[in-house]
Image (cartoon, rainbow, N blue to C red):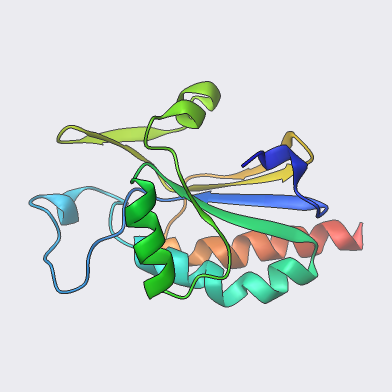
Length: 148
């Protein structure tokens, strides 16, 4: 995916550390990491705001460092109407020096949102807390741009 070539005025990329698997406990120590919990609510908030974001001229992508197969299962399970991208090789993360943290052997993204116009990042929301507040904040920012 080439983020700067979306057919809409805006491209929204929101990032999250990792989603869990239903009926499985969080990994040891996960709940003690500030900002780690909340990936499913963040994804669901973007799903629930997707129609409004599209109406404001945005193409939406989720992003994490989990692999594509894992992302595909989660996106189908949560009925996400937009692609979820995998940066498992950390290429985008490294190129943009995105905020990360280590959990065991994994490098995970911290929670943030980028708004692009073409190939330029024009707005950043970081840090994001609580996780479900991210989508409404992006929507409010985009609405403000249409009034100007």
